[in-house]
Structures are given as structure tokens and as C-alpha cells.
Length: 72
Image 1: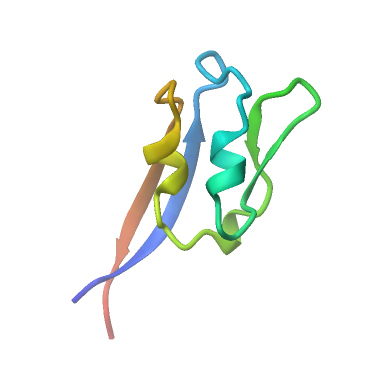
Image 2: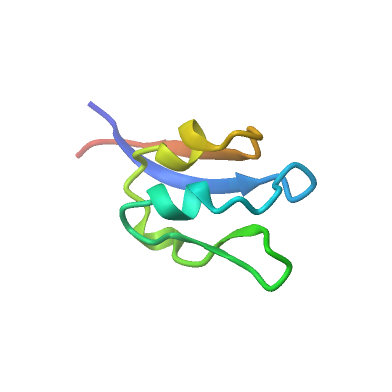
């Protein structure tokens, strides 16, 4: 079975209104609000692919994109 690995957390800054819900739900503190008040990825290496940010975003501004890695 292939192990899932993060490829990218894509945030559409035009759709993000800076509500902070994604930041509050992230169990690993991967996201923070930037100076402009929009969500930004600060620690992608800590992402556990739980997708809570993606599921809770009321603006559908976040997509967690994963790549498959061959299990060896």
C-alpha cells in the first residue's frame, strides 16, 4: 500500500477572508495568518494530511494536495 505524502497546501488568497478557522483547527500548527490577515503555510513539513483545514474552510480556499509514494 502506498504511503501518502504532502505535495502542497494550496491557498487561494483571493478567496481567503482571514477568518482563522483553518489556523484554529490545524492540530500541528502548519498554518498562520500573515500580515495581511490571510492564511499562509508556515510549517508544511509538520502536516499530517488530516485535511481539517480544507474541510472547515467556509470559503473553500484551501486544498491539501498529496502525492503517492511507493511503499518499500
